[in-house]
Length: 339
Image 1 (cartoon, rainbow, N blue to C red):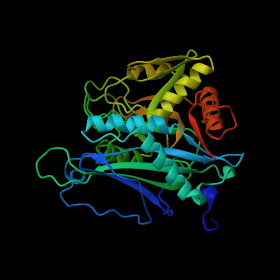
Image 2: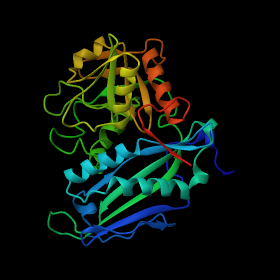
Image 3: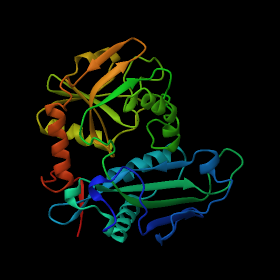
């Protein structure tokens, strides 16, 4: 692709050649279809537009040093989508169908997979929406599942570098026992005001405490939080946090490196005891946190006094990236290699 500057890609949408689609009608999934249009035609009374019957996923494929393309943990994305479907009453897409559509979307758009040296990747966006019309509040009878792909650069412009966060007590991302554990668009709509307020104040992202008591760490914007201290990887346990596949991977890699792993409630004051901290997710992988400011109390929690990522964050980031790119062996069966 001679017209794409691979090394300077933003994390945004670039049109590609094809997307793949599958419809649920009459109680069953249809055949996989290929489309070259980037628009969809849906009824104005579709449940996705009125009642939020919408779910999505995000995963990546990588062009590797050996020339092969590797997809990271797509089975886990299929299973998380199924969990979301159960949560908001949509039909579950079988794992085999999900994986077949991911692979088909990549193969059809293979020329858009960035070269290894660029540091960019092919972002894969599965989307499931209720398309059947309803005026009353109830699940649709028809659904559309589609996958599109687009090449992306780093989520944060600085790449693997420290960023600063601000605690936002006046906003909640999701309620306990609500939809926080599901990957639905409403959770992200709920974060837009807080995210803009954080950016306007000069921070890279907002930082949420639990919605019930405002005492415990919840999420870092759209990412999971983790902290490092006493050779232990610690991440919050909450009924309103999205189960991050990246976080799950990092917990395993931390254990592989000899760290203890704890998933438990983390009170805000414990932030002062962490040696390192980070936000993690598919888009950024790890975004090391330099500082978290609590504007209400005036407290600042500093994790990178020299402005550089900590040594354990660096090791975890490198290990995960090397597995994704086929540089290190995939001992956990996370990677699918396209021949």
